[in-house]
Length: 226
Image (cartoon, rainbow, N blue to C red; front, side, top):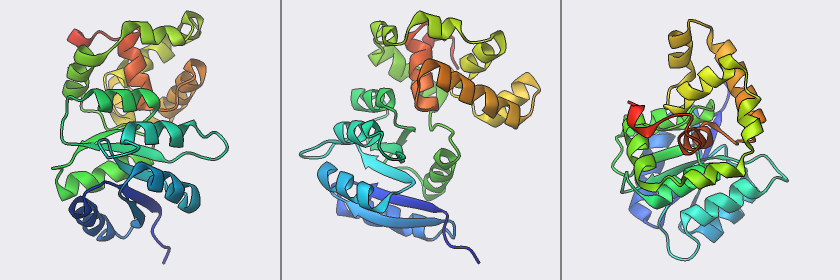
């Protein structure tokens, strides 16, 4: 038998939260919790040493908060970066939105069910984002800064083919590869190819950043997304 394939680091300043998440995840044959941290500095040290696939990151911690920790982990281009899921007690939180801008793969509320937690870890492990469209729309309406999109040159968007632009709009609405494939009547493999090309052309780290940029650039209108 092969060992667990998904290595998870849990970062939260509440010991009970860490213990609860560890118990849920370690009950899964394909998931291993390789470490815990109560603050950002420890999280960075453990991540550099243990190389987790996924980091569950509390957004509000004393000292180095989850947002800055996320920026540092994802800003280190010398090694493969983990996928980061932000943990929060608020679904409308400027820290959550800023973490998505920085490249976090999405967010979970801390009162998430055991089943939802496991699904979330597996979802981000394959490159999908954890972004409920309705919550994403409200986040964007509250915190989006249209000028932030200017960091990406307009010619980058113009370089997308018509099909890539179509896929980009669906990604920005929070749809998964399977949902996009069904919408466009193509294979998931084709969607993955388009998504990879889109991220490369726009210089984006992942789907969550694509969602944020999609709204901030006006490619997707917040009031039109479901």
